[in-house]
Image (cartoon, rainbow, N blue to C red; front, side, top):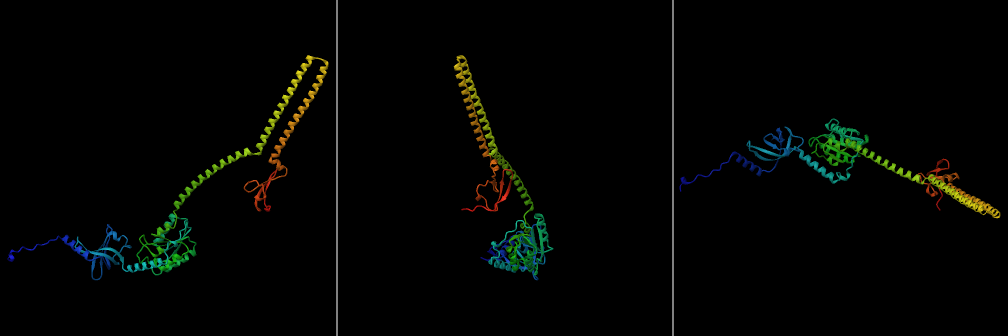
Length: 453
C-alpha cells in the first residue's frame, strides 16, 4: 500500500476549561502542600470573608486565596507589607487561567520559632507539675478588693472596670499598671504579682491585656511570669488576648478567661443574682418566722391548758367544793335524824295521851327525857365528828398548798432552764439558780456543791 492509502491520525480536542482542569489536577497531584515565605501585597477581604492577596519577594509573585474556613482563627488580620509564612497547595484558577496558591495556614514570619519555644516551655513546666489541677486555688465567692495587673492606658483596663461596675460594684479595685508588651514587660509583671498583695489586701488578681499577635502576647509566655503566678499569695485569673489565644500564663493561672472582660466576670458574682437570692431568702425567712410563731402560739395554749389543770389553786377549789358537799350532806343527815326523832316523839306523845295512866305518863316522861338527852348527845357527837373531819380535810388541803410550805420557811429553787432542783448534784459551782420564797424571791450563784461519796 502506498502512503496515499493510509488514514490520517485521530486528533484529541480539549476545551479550555477541560485543559485547565487537567493542568490543575496535574499540579495538585504532583505537588503536595508546600511552605512558602514572602511579603503580602494587594490584600483584600470582600464581604464573603475570604482573603485574596499576592505573595511576593524581590524576583517573583504568586496570587493567593485563603478561604473563610481557613482564615477564621488567624489573628491579627494581615496587611500589605507583612512578612508571612504560609502552607498552601499550588493549583490553577481556571476562570483567569492563572497560577494560584490555596492557603491553608498563615503565620507571621518567625512565628514558627516562637511556637516551638512556646511548646518547649509548656512541656517543661507541665513536667514540673506547675500546671497541675491540684495547685489551682478556688476564687473568693464575695471579693471585697480586686487587684488588676494590666496596662494603665489600654482598652483592657476599661473593659475590666465596666464589667466590675456592672456585676459587682461593691468591690474596690487596686490597679498595678505595667507594660504588657516588650522586653520590660515580664519583669514588671513578676514584680507586680509579688508586690500588689503586699501593698493592698486584695482577694484575687486579674492579669490581663487585649488581643494581639503572638509576638505582642509573648510577655505572657515568659517562664518567670508563670512561676510568679504560682508563687503569688492570692488566686490569679488570666485574661490575655482573645478567645483563641492561649499563653503560658493561662496554664499557670488558677483560672483562665477568654478575654479581660471574661476575667472580670469569672472573678465576681452577679449582684443582680445576689439581690434575687436575698429576696428569695427574705420571703422564705418571713414564712418560717410565721410558722414558728404559729407553732409557739399553739404550744403556749397547750401549756396554759395543762397549767390550769395542774395548778394548786384548781386543786384547792376542788377540795373546797368537796367540803361544801360534805357540809351539805351533814346538814341533811342531821335534819333527817332530828326529823325522825321528832316524829317518834310525836307518836309516843299520841300513844301516851291515848293510854293516859299517870304512872305510865311519868315513866314515859322519864323515857322521853332520856331519849331526848341521848338524841341531843348523839346529834352533838355526830356534828362534832363531822366538824373534826372537816377540820382535818381543811388542814390536809392547807398542808398540800405549796404556799403553806413556803410560809414555814422553806424555799423553792429552780435551775437556769426552769427545772425544780431536788438534789445538790443537779447544779455545779458557779451556776446561777432562782430561789422562790413565800413572798418574793431572788437569784443566787452556787458557790459549792456536796461532793459525791
